[in-house]
Image (cartoon, rainbow, N blue to C red):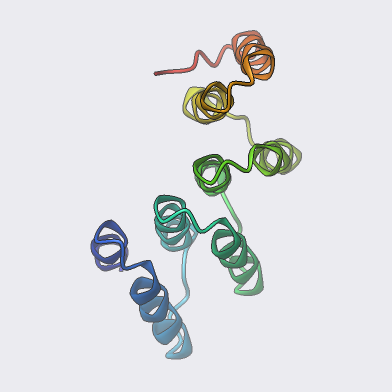
Length: 138
């Protein structure tokens, strides 16, 4: 299932991928966090953060538990849409859910703050990442 969803999301046809998953769920398919993660990353790429958040809600409604990748995907969706305060919200949600952000997650946030010329915030996040031994990548 993930391979098919990835084909459509990489082709920037996330709506089709979402319809495929919805159709399969109506037939009894039990989706996984990975299925939703693919779609959320697709929404990050298309810069549609509200739809990414809707997918997160649909994921919960389907009884699927988000994983660390889900939260990183949500953060990416917010960063790519210049919604940095919302990205921080998802960082807090991630840690509240018991997941530890890794270097990729911190890197997303730091790059977003740098792109927005919010260097103090970028620096603060960098120091938090280092303190947590998550050395951000480029």
